[in-house]
Image (tube, rainbow, N blue to C red; front, side, top):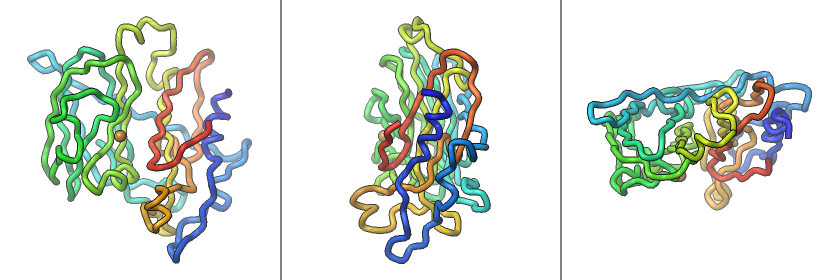
Length: 260
Ligand SMILES: [Cu+2]
């Protein structure tokens, strides 16, 4: 499959009209870019999160939970949430066997948590609903990575707020490498030939705000969007080097499944 085919096919989504008096932003002429037009936005590649080595040899990663805003649809500003930025978060890359520590500062006006989705961690550092980070507070998990190479992610898991926080932009990739992944003859240069693709569908109000759960259909089936984002960008394109390219695809959507 050609890379452009993959990215473009992400746009083929169900249409959605306004339900029950809510005014959603229409996708007419916007979502359904043709194969030869649109896709003029450079694909954003989440940065790798920097770390420092602490005296005990563990690696310390620091990031924050922030409010922000971003224009996804031209002409509309959307209030967002993000990790150390306005939407999504940096990619955290670690190795099997490594002891890692984090400093996570919650700059929201409400609680959140940071859940390491797919990581095998002690319950106290899992970031589930019981590991609340209050507004203005900092959380300092500390664990040893003990699992095979994988593409995982981190996102909030606060009681009653998980879906909304993720929808507004709180999600990032968590990549583990190990001796086996080192030994494989596959692309390994992050952002160059090893490219993350976070797929998300979104629905907006006609003032640009995200339209998360609005009606019983949303509650029962999950919120299905009529706009498609890849790494937080609509209609992205990206030039890749000649040869083999690795795509790490994350379905970072709240409800939708995709046929790619
Ligand atoms: Cu999860």
